[in-house]
Image (cartoon, rainbow, N blue to C red; front, side, top):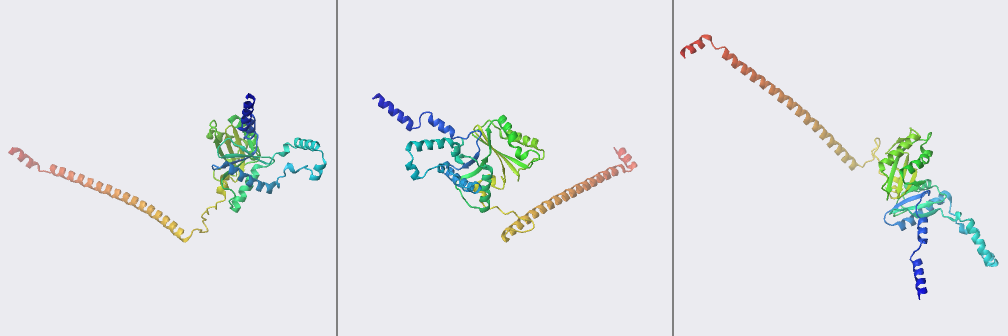
Length: 347
């Protein structure tokens, strides 16, 4: 009875994922320092996002690198040869092939747990993530075709390090050289985002990275409007994901949903692109603006003239009152001397 109970407990433990095996599997499926790949953000549907990401990335990876060759298809024998071989010999041969090609059997895309909600990490193998993501966004921007529903942003990760400032500074000192070390230079901006991490201050990190870029080449200049390069810094827990990308503003911060939207036409000084109704509204708005400006200036001038006239009138009034007072004093002084004496005698 006790043996049966103990066997049931063992089976239950294995069935529900108990033991250390599950911990080892989980650890091997998480984002870690030293990996390269693509960070993909989504909206509350990570499973569907992963499926869309695989379809999208494989479609464009086939254009860059050709169809993926699965290792399972290599070295397999035909049905007739398998029947002739002894079973034990065939098994030993297969095990030997698996051991010899274990490192080569890894797929070029593998979905891992990023450590943050609504973010998945696609680990890449023998793939240049920055070139692949740029190709995806370039094509979507040109064709304006919607190829995903839940994917939001796709950010390449070409380098990873520990998410502590001293580790980041040490790693970035060599990581940034291909783009910013003399004679290379360019305009740039820094896009920083931290998830499930509170020990890094955004302003301090950006200031530190900008100082490093300036030391690599003083010709490197910050441009927050339309930079040639963007340094992407994505911190998730204890891992810092890094990349330097092009056309970050043009491709709407590498947003797959936004990049397929039609660009808003910009008004041209030489060519009028507005419709007649819009032009009339614009002209009316400008006219009203000018009228208000003129009215304001007119009121200001009128007020100035009024104040000037009031001051002048006040000055004239004061002058008249002064002259009147002076006249009265003169009249008193001009009374005949003998009359004053007569008045005195009468008293």
